[in-house]
Image (cartoon, rainbow, N blue to C red; front, side, top):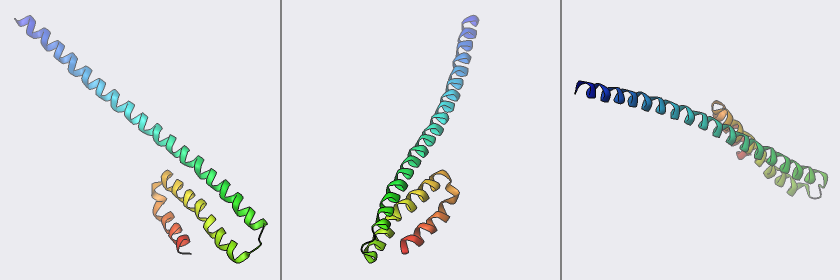
Length: 113
């Protein structure tokens, strides 16, 4: 009876150690997965930010090159500038959360313009 209790105690101890080790390993894997997901999302957002800058830059250059009605085209160009400003400020806010309040001020100033 004493040997059986010792055997059960050893199994219980081994099971507890294994459970603790598995829990720690799962937490480590979860942390690695979160950091990789964050990096992937940041790269994905950066890729679309660059795409927005290129497309808006192309349209802005076309309006500047073919300035036929300046009064209307200035308003159109002001709207076209919104997408790069908002996308860059949003991406920088995603990368650096400390910069977000300052970038919000810049966005609000441009929006009020």
